[in-house]
Length: 350
Image 1 (cartoon, rainbow, N blue to C red):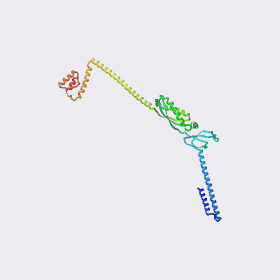
Image 2: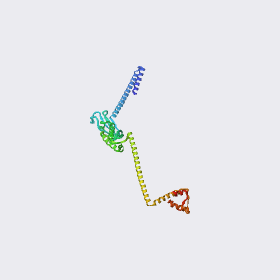
Image 3: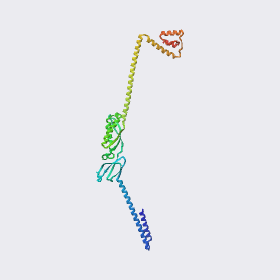
Image 4: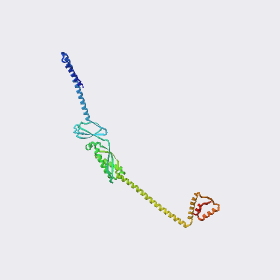
């Protein structure tokens, strides 16, 4: 902008001089020459200043870019390994991945010649689903949850063999292999009853396999275990059949108890008949006892009837009825009174 202003000033001065023409006075020509010389000196000073400012800005930009290319940051929870494109004679390092593991913080590198590879060393979860067969050829769906992280001292080897996505390359394959081999040793029922044992066996084998690839497994758990629809239907039918068998077993036991009760009842009746027969052979005591029991029952029935009238036994009729009752053996056990009604006469006749 300053340069443009100076150029415009010089143009106006030259135009004014041309319009006025070359005056007859030589003093005016000298003044104009001094004015033009002053403008030229100012323009030269401004040009130098602008040039210096441009060079300074360019140097600052180049320096900032160079500093940014020479440093790198390793965030918390991460580690880095350095890759050299060429051997470094100053540090005595060969080309390729260096064996030193770089910790967290800001570090220096040689631009373009060195390239840091940053690993995430924090524990990361992963769910691995798989479908496999049991010992009794039942298909089961299993989901395995893993908590894994790389071994810090082996980060250079991990990068050389597997790369930064080492868990994607290794964990799904070894998890499926171990799950299939372990589940094939158990049938469907044992998978449900011995789930803790199955999980422990899977964990032991997976930890051993992952250690071959410098991967640490901190926790392994079976989070999901389901069977196919056919197996679920078979289990339901089996439960129904077991319940039906239990019911039939109960019915059989009930019949056995009823049969035993009938035998015991028949034996008791036979024993009672034998005792009655023996008692009748010995005398009429049992018959009289049965008569008294029948009379007691009849008396209780008559006492509940509202059409019965009792009269004192002082009259002759009452004594004659009592004598007749004793003669028939139908003694009612009513002392002091008797009933004079058609119902009582029917009872006496019975």
